[in-house]
Image 1 (cartoon, rainbow, N blue to C red):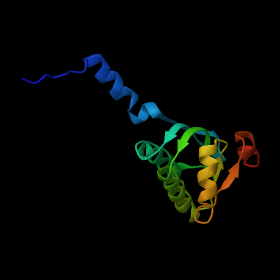
Image 2 (image 1 turned 45 degrees about the vertical axis):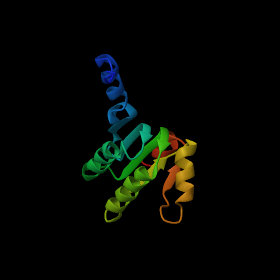
Image 3 (image 1 turned 90 degrees about the vertical axis):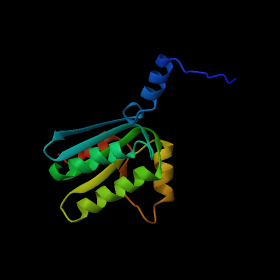
Image 4 (image 1 turned 90 degrees about the horizontal axis):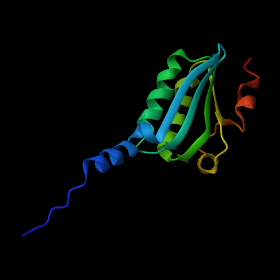
Amino acid sequence: MSTVFATPPFLLTDARKADHPAERLQISVTAPSDQVTLCAVAGEVDHYTVEVFRRQLIGSLSTAAPLVVVDLSKVTFFGVAGLRVLIEARSRLASTDHRLRLVTGPRCVDRLLEAAADIASFETMTSLAHAVLDAA
């Protein structure tokens, strides 16, 4: 005789919701001016959430202003998958007159960018105000 333990449906639903990429990563793409496209990222950028990040950032590049600012100041985890998306974005912009600039701050972002500096150097700023200052 075997015993089967069932998870109550309300616990199963809550667990799935908390683990959904949209619950772990929030992204907003806006155009604060005709010179700047801003992609503000908050939460965890990892293998599980990277497609959300990629879709939003890469998807915005076709209509991007001359300066694309990716604000990573509210990121709580930033993995190699996220770095690959930034490299892809920079590569797509390389054949245009557009620039990519990052707003950093969290140690998880700065540490990965430092470690990858030989293959992935980016223009970085420590605040959003500084990042968009010369774009106006």
